[in-house]
Length: 437
Length: 142
Image (tube, rainbow over all chains, first blue to last red; front, side, top):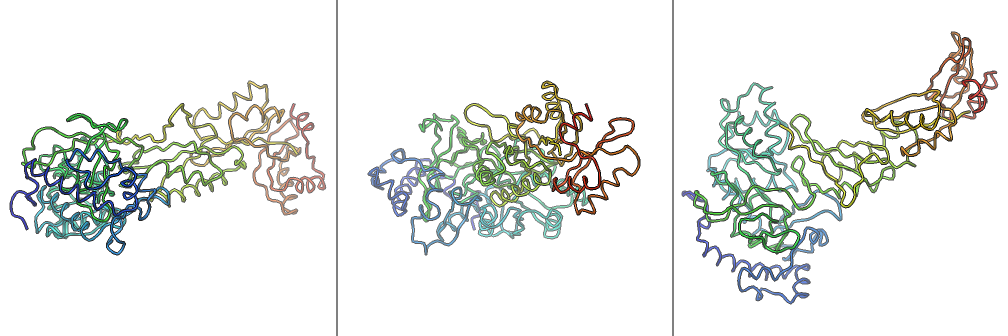
C-alpha cells in the first residue's frame, strides 16, 4: 500500500516519460488488437501493423472504432485473446443489434481495479474507510468496477447495490460508512429519506466524501448535494467499452478530471471532420486503450464532448484534465444510470402494430427521481373504439420497453399526427431535467 | 341501427374543441356526445346528423371509427329504461354503454352500445320497442 500523496508514481511522471510509456504501450496494443477478427480485417485492408507506429501521432493512420463496430462484432468480434482467457463479461442494456459485450481478461480486471484504487486514493480513501457502493451490481460496470478497486485499496466495502433507501441509511449509521458511490439523482432523493427518518447526515453519520457516477449532473446540483450532505462529491468518468468507471477522475481540486494517460491515449476531434481540434478547444473525446488485453480498442469514438484544461494541476499530477462534459454528439441519454439510445425504443415500437414510429421521448423529474415518458402515435386503423383496448396497447408497449431498456417508462398514446413532424432530423428526445431543482 | 362515431383524442384542453369545430364547419348537428377518459387518453363518442359527412369531417383527426349502435324510442316515463334493460337481459345481451335524451314532452331516445347489434335489435323489436334507422332517427330528433 502506498503511503505518499499518490497511489502510483506514474500519476506524477513527467510528460516525456509518460509519452515514452504511451508509445510502448500503443505498439503493444496494436499488436494485441491484431488478434481480434475485427482489427485483423481492418489492418489487412489498410496495410497496418504495430510497425506502423513510430510516434504517438501515427495513431491517426488508424481508422476510428465506432460503437457500431462493437454492435456489428457482437459478441466476440473484437476479442483479441482466446476465449478461455476471458474471466468476465460486462454488457450494455439492449437486445441483439443494439447490444455491446465487453470482455475482460484477468489482466484487464486487475488493471481496472488498480485504476479505480488510484482514483479513490486520490480523493482520500485509505484502508479503514467504509465504502458503501450504492450502484447496481451485475452487467453494469458501476457496481463491480468500484467494488474491486476499493477492496484492492484495502477499504471495508459494503456492496449495497442500488435502491432500498431506508436500509442504505441504516447501514451508513450501523457500519459507520465514510465513503459513498452514488448516482447524483439518488443522492438528491435520499435527502427526503433523511428527513423522514430524522437523520441529519452532517451530525449523525461519519461520511467523508462521495463519488458521483453514472449520470451527468449540473454544477448547481453538486453544490446543493455538497451543502446538504456536508461532504465533497467527486466526479468520475468512464465508459464500459474501456472497462468502466475510473478512466478519468477528479482530484481534491474539483477542477477537471484527470484522464489516466498511461491507460488511454486521448484525442479530441471535430466530430464532423474527424480532424483534431486545437489545444484547449472542445470536441469529441476519442480514446485508444493502452493496457487492455482481451478487447483493445483503437481510436474509440466516445461521443462525449469535452476539452482539455490547460496548465498544470495544483495537485501535482501530470495527467491532463478533462473539462466538464458538454454533452454528446449522438442522442444517447442516461436515465437512472442506464445508457439508452432512442433507436432501442424505436425498435420496440416497430414491433407493436398498433403504433407508428413517430415518437417522442420526454425526460423529466417526478419529485427528485428521473422519469421517462414515451409518447407515440396510434395508427388510425388500429383504433377499435374503446379505452380498454388502448389501455392494453399501452401496457404491452410499457412491458416491451421495460424488457429492452431496463427502466419502466410511462407510455402515452397520442392521436395520429398528434406529435410534431419536423423537417430533416427528427427530435426524438426532449430533456427537461436540467430545469428541475 | 344507426352509426356512432368514436374518436381517439388526447385528454387535454383544446382537443374536444377541434372536433366540435370541424363538425360545426361542416354543418353537422351533434345529437348525443359522450366523453370517456383514462389517464391522458380520451375517447369521444358522437351521434350526429349525416354520419358519413361527419366521419369525413373528422377523418383528419386520425383515429375515427364508425360503430353501430341502437337508437330506441321509448316513452319518457319511469321504468322505460328498465323495460329495455330487462328485455336485453332476458336475451342474454350485455349493454356496454348507454345514454339517452328526451325529444319531446312524452318521448325519449335511448342510445345503446351492445356487442351484438342485430341480436339486440331483434330482441327489442320482438318486445315491440321502436328501434330507429338513420332516417327515422333524423326525423325523430330533427
